[in-house]
Image 1 (spheres, rainbow, N blue to C red):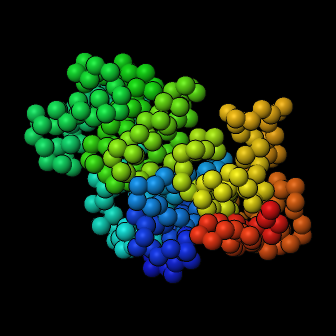
Image 2: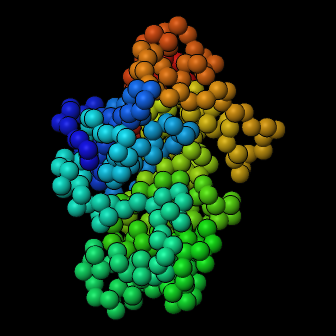
Image 3: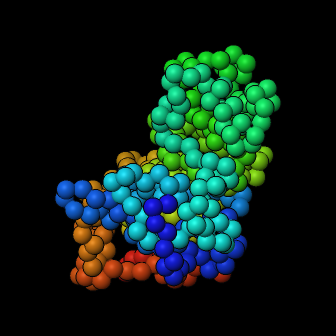
Length: 339
């Protein structure tokens, strides 16, 4: 990480940090250009439990992918992590310690599988390279394991596919290969950044089913980052909703889907098709998310919110427990007019 400071945690949950596999605490990431500083991630905290799925949702520009990039030390050179902590099983990690976790205990799958595959090398050897580097396998043992991984992620005819190049794979097949590569090091945590966006609806469903199956079989935790609430419905155990670089709502996924508290969360749900609900039309959220070059005193969603008042524009709401939440529900929302 560019910089990980010892800032005091505001907490992502009522549970102790040691109860979580990965904890992000008060993360701040900035980007710099000729127009000034973009505050891409502001005081973001969330947690991942062992064996569970965390959904991180929000429109493009909300900061969700930048948060994941910071965890994986992939923030571009035009940006920097300027504050926050990363804890692994409750222990704050130094940059050197995090570097050892990435690619082994923590791996990542990106939106475009072709960008993660070398077009000049056949797919199989790209996976054996991971096995040899992170697990110290011999060439023959790595090949056998790579074929097993191909079969595990549902790639047919593994021996033939092993020798093929990325351009010979369909989009869905390439994504399966990238998932196999991410699993090669036997990670505890898999971060997936928009893993189905570039795929058609049928293949999207297959990839999501694959992730759920792998989680059940391997016991791994998953962070599923997406702009589409429909993708995490029925998959995520916990949900974090981000807007303009901040967390605006978080808690149990089933609770948020059943009764969203923040106007932005409700807007995302109303603009998302639902397989079990017939709607005359989808209702898009008017306007666009802001580029946060100046940190305003009020709520960043104010200009797009139908419930906005003067207070919203002058005083930023903090994440607070949702009124009426059940015991142990851990629901929090940052809104002066939470439902």
